Length: 349
View 1 (cartoon, rainbow, N blue to C red):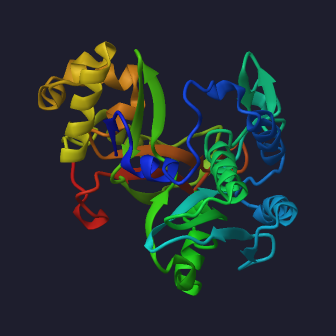
View 2: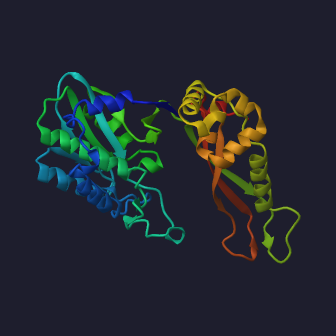
View 3: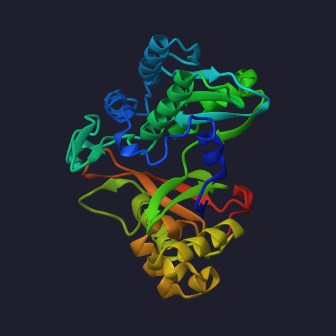
């Protein structure tokens, strides 16, 4: 869940740590930008698709940078190839900040990309590649801020920790979860974490950041169906596959009831105030009470629509291994996301 604000307090805290630019300075001429761009290309070209992850190769990438900058760092590898890394700049007594991103990325099918998803190719001013947004781009932004602080030599009000972790796309057990369980000392004194979830845009003459204040709760389900097996030349009146299809169609036709939680209501109203194109969000309760308007939002902006209800996306299907065999079992996997004020045991339609 995100809320729109003209300046993000957590981001302001980070910016306050760095030397301020001179009055009227053109930030587009920042000499660090070409190096940051090159680093992001290099980072994208490290294939960290999870599974299997291979995050340790990216850990070596960051370790080399810290070695050259003379910055101490630590690495862990709970399983072969599944590495994480962090480095700390020590500061004053204020609560510390972790600049956190995850190294791994979800799979990408090159058949549906205009460029090799691991190529880090520029086109029309955009950098193409798996992880450019989620979250290697964020990681390089964190890295550049971290290096700028280190190079400045300025006294810091708080510790600043750069952290890149494994396995987020599969739940984080071998990454952030492992660090929490096995290295809680790293988190000692930390009060803020800057991570993925928010974003920034220019609306009119204002820079607006969206700040994530809570999250939907993931719940992954597997739906199994069993039925009579047979030959594809003489199908029965029902099978595991037809039963599964009917169940999934019921899910599609009867979505969970919409409901506006307080964080989403604030976010929608703020967006409506900031952006004329989002005027329909000004009255969230009215929006969810009118099915046609809610359906239109689903068509035009699935991300905002997903904030109004529990959702279940069908992501994987499996049945027969041969085209001419009616399988005795069929399986569907569902990625469900629940509104943050309820748990899986309270899932309701």
